[in-house]
Amino acid sequence: MEVLQHDVHAFTNRYLTGKSFDDIEMKVVEKETEKGIHFGVDFKVHKDAIDKFDKIGQMIQSNQCILQHNLIMHSFIYTIQVVGEDENEGLLVKLSIVPIGYTFRYPLEMKKGGVPITFKPEVPELKDVKWILKNGETMNLLKENNGSYSCDIHVSLASFKNFIENGVAVLRVEMTIDKEYFEIGEYVNMDLKEARVASNSSQILEKILKGEEVPKSDWVISASEGFPRDFHVHGPVLADSSMVLRGAITSHMSIGKEIAMISSENRFILTNLKSKDMKVRSDTLKTISECVKSMICVTCSPQGSLLAAYNVSLIVAADAWQMAEAKGKKVNKEKVKKLIGESWPIIDSLLET
Image: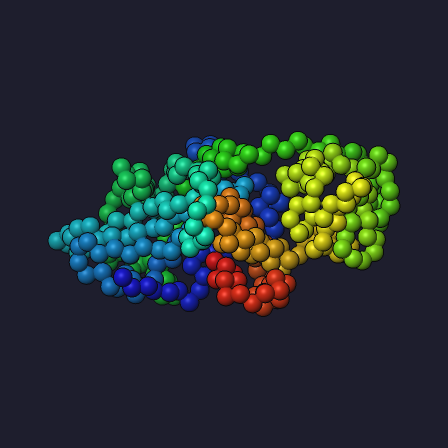
């Protein structure tokens, strides 16, 4: 096997304006289009790979492409295989899209033992899978018995060379996946009560962040240092914001080293946070660094643990990275590593992922 590397990114950044897809105007699709979420992927084929084909049975495959939405993902590759020979056209090839798995580079060399993986989304059913040619023509990819999707027409190897531009052949493949597949509640227990949001919640939050007491506040969160240090909040709302905080409040006990409970009061200290950290900011480097920290925790966990947490961290970091690049801001890896505060080799590996 030989690995061929592109000098440019293997896939195109789809955040063209730097905005989240939720903020982009919805596109009107044709009536006959399959219902669901429509994906389009530009697979890049290295010119040298095509030139190496000279006999039946040879095959090349891409690196993984991730289709993801709502923190659920599935990865695919393409394969191009020489499957026959025609007297006039020469060697014939078949393009296929092959499902790989419901995660991406999930660490395998973790601590032994572990727990059964309960986060196991099935392979999504792809609908209306098409290979879009440069001239606008389309070729259908039909599902085979092995779960892959392959062109219903074999293409001559010679014609592939017509797709090459600047040393790279671009294969545009489009498909649709049912929206229901990406309902994260189908795979992860999301049974948290939705907090009631008052009409004047913005003003209340502003007062809380200033350290002022607000009506009916019954708990205090204290930062490790800074001013204001104490933030007066509502226990029921806090308990419904996360499983960790629910556990801390209902048990009135410290959680690890991060949440230090004061036994005589309805108050706990966030030992790793300063007062200035209490405000949520849109900070690309901060987002990526926190996601990498979470992924490091996964690699230190027993094998099979925290797969959903790994996927979420990977997706959030990748989205933040691509939106920053689409805005023309290059992500500085050294600054991310500085925010993490460690120099472990695994950080470079995760940033590369």
